[in-house]
Image 1 (cartoon, helix red, strand yellow):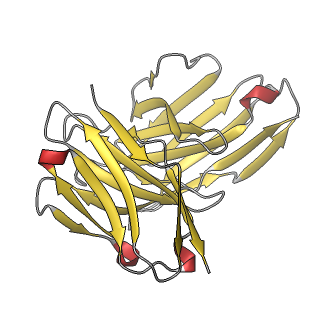
Image 2: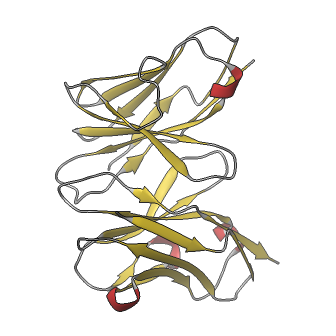
Length: 114
Length: 116
């Protein structure tokens, strides 16, 4: 069965510092992996996705993530945090073309300190 | 492209009434739509998956007679919360997929339901 683990329900970084949000997954088939961002009282916006092409994926707003099969990880990073990055971030995995259903991590709230 | 709208964005209703939430794909054909429920400070809980023209597939523990889902066209799905009670108060989010987009779901902005 697939599952997603996001380490840290809250992550706090200073403005301008590196952002690192951790995501580990388990899957019996080659996974598709996603990071979504949710601002308060809003729906989800796709940041980036991995679909078996390049292992380093660049997304919107300066975020990127690297798929590491040996570590079953898909951590999200951004070199320099901005106040506008404060939001909830969700990692998700799916099995691919045969199953559109997403398995969600619990989410990580990113807090940016001025 | 790939815009999904939800209406209404907020609704307050009295206990015992029914509420309908609409989810529309504005610029693509949504062959599959998903309905989620999100409790405060928690992740999304999938309620059901619907394919256009067929009955929705509900997740375990979700009452299909309570949460009626209709996906009558490739651009519209509706969720009706029947005989709503305060415990149904939540944030409901829909998403939509089409077969040409590599397994990606496009999310609506969500509907905040408050049952008094």
